Image (tube, rainbow, N blue to C red; front, side):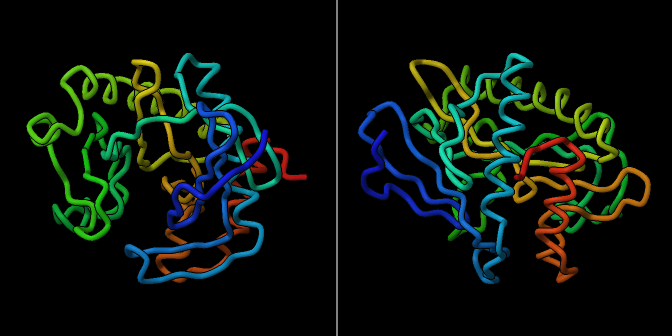
Length: 237
């Protein structure tokens, strides 16, 4: 497979077209950002750790019957994925209260949420990814009613799979965001699943092992990501 021109550069990944019209290459960079890009740093090894962790998670989800865009690892920091028509919506599930929901609703951090909460956000950095609902999504044509239902169903299926997977590794899956796209008429899980896009706490100590270490200036960001990978059994060598 030949990598062609750059298609899109996000906060931490670059997407490239290839000579296969159905496949793209994701390059996970060492860039780390927070607060819609207001805080940016380079953290050595982060791209590699995220690439391999994402591959591990996507393969676990595929084994559980959840269709993803992941195809295969290409290099230490690159992966081959199906080319999706991305839906500009983030699906967020929260199992434990943390982050923005605490600020918005005035609840304390660390509350177990039963049932888990589900929220939609529009992918729009300029507007700080505003929360939207199903009516906004359908009225503005971002996704159809059937696509909204598929995103919700798959997001909760991911929750069932990964809560158990992380629990076996002594980790709490606090919350996470997912993105979906269209592929050959189906709604398929896209983007990534790494500590950049979820919150993970040690099950006993509740030590934060995710991007909040960067947001909150706690240090040891890559070391925390590596700890998560090692507990899951991800091969980083």
